[in-house]
Length: 557
Image (cartoon, one colour):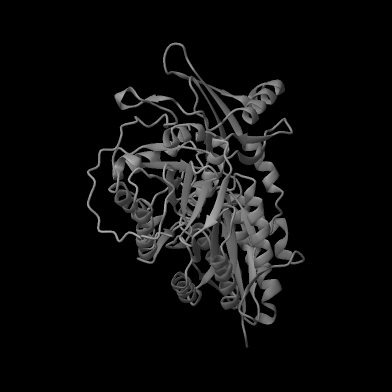
């Protein structure tokens, strides 16, 4: 005779109790709202408080005629102790067995999609300590207090076939040993979902119907994240999508004598955990409430020195909020760029406030490159080569500089690169197609750049997204190699600079590459999608840095 199987889950992050049963397809299904166990008396509580009442009700409803009932438990040790004690004391004549079970969760996503931040954000929310073990293809996080195991599969810049096979292999292995959830992370600030990601999600859904797949839309602090929500919902159908922000977000402004910031507190983790551990569905209404957590912080330098006085604008009068909001729309939150004096007293415009403007001093290395004799250049044209990973903002940067120049650039496709040039032959911009940092792609990109740089006066702009907040070692190696061609004509352009922690990225580059010129930019206005409390206005971070970059690279002509 088949025994009934029930699972009790104590959500350590919301302090709620949920109940699941295993159906004929061997899937865990949450109790319906009509079940007696779905009443608040049994859910908005703890096993420490009501373990006796809970096991009695389970025995009464799901162990009729004493056919046998297995109760699996997921949650903190204290709850399991109370459950075991209640079964022993209250159900002595019933065939009811309590069993301990560890919650196992796989977290997948591309590099930079926020997997680690999500796991740490959930653990830090309650101050739980987790043990971290690197297993090679994945990192294991053990929460020994709540008996939760997180398996973070190493990300890649693009989900390729081998990445899918490795991830699916681990999911298959764990599904045979109690895996219950797969979380797929997509960076909401990227505004895109790749075709390969769609394929991967479809395969997980088809191959592991007994495992719940959840989409975590991380880094949701801009309008475009809603586009990804809509896209993901269309292609995944039954997969729940949760927009969230796992750690505090700061968008900064840097100006002479004054700075303003938008600060967004983490949101969505409670709702995400409600579904993750309880299967509790929630609407996107929680997205409306998070906007109240937005803080505009105004910092004014004291006349006595660099002492900073903080004023929380949200606590000011309504008029003050309105005035502050208008200033956001009219001025740059990320900041105007500080003019700096370069060497030889030549004024350099557009250098980051953080950069000391020390020109690079690399010794050029001899390189054996086969030059493509079919490449031709207009004599007298200003030649600029723009390179960077996919999504680094290369096209947006060129389009922004086009507006600054006042010229109209014609675009031609050449396979490995895209050429922008004006009718007068003054400018030639070569945009190298985005690379994924694989060895072959890097070698091909380097070869193409070397071919295009027959003229040693050609300038090279290497774009790095300041919004991502990380640089891979292989990318730093490529920058070193490019700098060896001609160090005086290479510039690092940090695009999408709308965060306060951009200094970390700058420090990493300087430490790895040396004193190379770094310029911060935001090529187009950044829509945060945040309605400032007390107003109908939406915060917008104005573009900045292009005028300075144009002066540096093109001499302002």
